[in-house]
Structure formats: C-alpha cells, structure tokens
Image 1: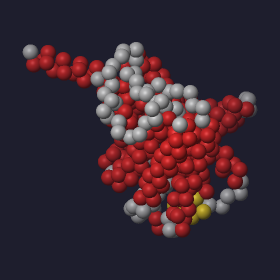
Image 2: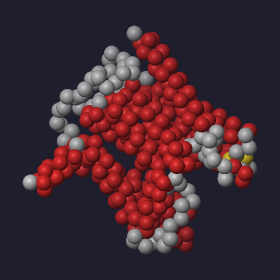
Image 3: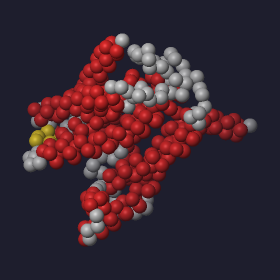
Image 4: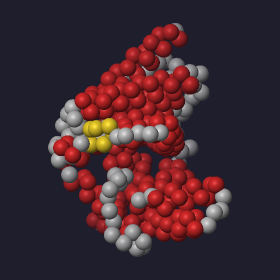
Length: 345
C-alpha cells in the first residue's frame, strides 16, 4: 500500500509541467557532459588536420577555431546541441495541444488591452514595431553596461588594453552577441516561457523561468576552468561536477547568479509585455555585446582580483553597479513601452 502511494506520488510529480521542464534541463546537461569528450576529440583532430593541409574556407575556419578552443567552449556547444535535440521530446511530453485554464490573478503589472492571456500560454504575435524594438533594446542595454565598465576603470578595478584593430574587436563582440541572443531568446522566451506561463501563470512563470535561466548560465563554465585528461570519456561528467561546485561559493552565487536572475526577469517581462521577441533580443544583444566588448578592451587590475566584488565585480556580471544599471534599463524599457502604448491609443 505504501509502495503504491509512493509510486502514485512520484507519477503526479513527473506529470507536472514544471517538473518536466526541470528534468529536460537536467537531461540537457547530462547529455552535454556525455558527448563533450567526443566533440572535443573530433574538434582537436579537425584542428590538427587543417593546420597541416588546406581544405576550404569554412572547414579551415572551423578547424582553426576548434584548435584554439578550450574545453569549456566544447561543453557550451554540446549543451546548445543537446537543448535542440531534446526540445521535440519536451514538446511532445508536455502535450502542448492540451487546453488548461490559466489563473488570471497572478499578474499585477500593466498589460495593454490588446495583449490577451491565453490558456496555452501567450503565443508570439506579429510586431509592427519590430525593428524599433530591436534597436531601442540594444541602445537601452549596451551603453549603460559599458558605462559601468568605464566607472570600473576610473575606480582602478580595470585597465585598458592596447588595441590595434578596433574594427576586429567590434566584429568579434557583436557577431557572437547576435547569434547567442537569437538562440537563447528562441529557446527561453520563445518556447519555454509560453510553457511556464501556461502551467504557472504569468508572474510565477516568468520568475521560475528566470531562475532556470540564471541557473543554466551559472552552470555554463567560465574561462579558465581546467579539466584533467579532457580526451577521456568521463571528462565531461567530471567537468560538470566541477562547474556545479560553483553553487557552493556564496561569493559567486550572490554576485553573478543574482545578476543573471534579474536579466532573466527583464527579458521575460519584455517578452510578455510585447508578446514578441524583438525587444528581448535587442536587450540581450546589447548586454552580451557590452560584456564581450569591454572584456576585449580591458583587463582586471592585479590589485582588484583578490577583492570582493561588491561595488564592481571582476567582470560586468557582478557588483552593485551592474545591478543598478540593469534596474535602470528596466525602468527605461517601462517608460518606452508606456509611451508607445499611449501613442497607439
């Protein structure tokens, strides 16, 4: 009898949409850990081949990138691949055709009358202001975060590098920002947010997805993490355990994790407020561009590396100044959308 009750309780948990999404995320990390050693070995073999023999432009570029890449880059690419491969299984598992009533009482922020709430979540709608939202999102995100970096230089937390090719720095900052933001917005705010809203309501859905968004990015390994014997078939699992150990550091958890959580809240709110991905994509590109650009043109000063990142962190993901910049960006986004809504009436 107790066994039947435990089995029934377990099945109720597994049938919960939120739990299924958490299991999906866990499965993505597990699959990435399993395939990363093989992707790493294949990439390094390709790098060795292209370093001794010319093939074609794309293969040569791919081989050169793989030859220079650290282990964590292979892990990140494997994680993205795993998320795409497992996404159809998640959609099928959630039975997206099943209609459910959504409680209207969760959301308390202003929502325009033409943006209705749906039993299946909130579908994306055509956005007549898409290019305006994209550009405004970028301009509200990137300059403020770069201003934090400038303050960090003035506070002697960072110092400028010597740059000889500013065009190359700009391209290498903007291109990955565009691709990473498009991919993550389609996954998180495009697909998953609608599912979270459907099963939890708007406010709890956005908060829960923002926590998942922060956790996923917090688990993505930073540069410099080293793994012994990366070619070994178990190196991915050992590397995942090494990355997960970051949760045991209060310094990193309450610094970077909190920033990522607020970023997720702003992006989720912007997507729900506009029923579109254009504004979140613009914001996301702006933040990633500012982070990568500042990282390429500056370096943390030796005296700041051992300090606690309270005012400003070791990069733009940490520190009170970064949090204030994010909150001010959210305030400006609110004013922009409010003014646009009033003009459309």
